[in-house]
Amino acid sequence: MNSRDADRQNGAEWSALMARAQDGDRKAYETLLRQAVPYIRAVVRRIHAAPDRSEEVVQDVLLTVHRVRHTYDPARPFGPWLAAIARRRSIDALRRRRRTEAHEVSDAVAYETFADPAANRQEEKLATAAGLNAAVAGLPARQREAIRLLKLRGLSLAEASVESGTSIAALKVNVHRAIKSLRKRMTGENES
Image (tube, rainbow, N blue to C red; front, side, top):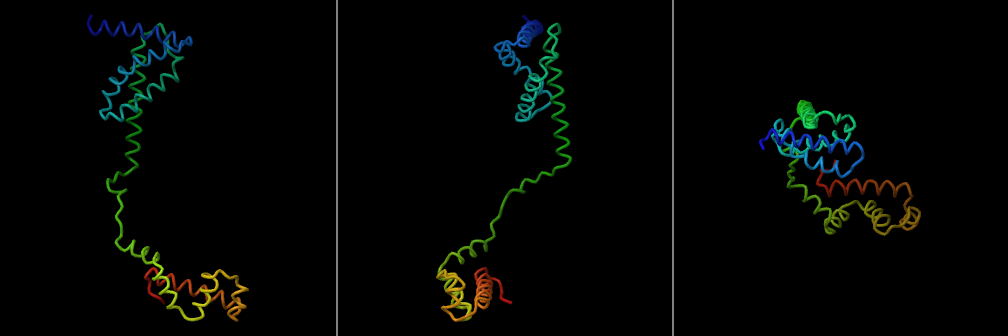
């Protein structure tokens, strides 16, 4: 049997399977799709060389066949109907790819990251208690006391005001200035 006779036999078998599938025979439909996938791949690979892209198109063809299976006329050959769907889906995929490439720029190094050598030094400085203690010790006395009472001991503004003899407003100002000063010292910024 030559390839043309084999194609006719497959075509007749596929037409019969599709007719049974249209009548609700699930096994016939599964058999048809399983047998047709190599044929679909062959048609798609004539247009798409990349294996990943061709497999994507094969899946699209299978979905399309499923969606439009009711339009198949069992009196006509199944192979040309399937090949037409495969060619159209392949061309659609090429068009989508060209549209995407027309609007997108590919940059191989776009997602590479390079660490700044100074990045970890700031984190290390913040993490060391000695660095923080030294920074707090360098604060003016009123700011140091406000930080000690409110942030380290966790007193309320009213409690800290009573203990220090300083007004609540003055404590707020001192804490704000102290935190601003500590942030500058710990991140290495120049104080202004």
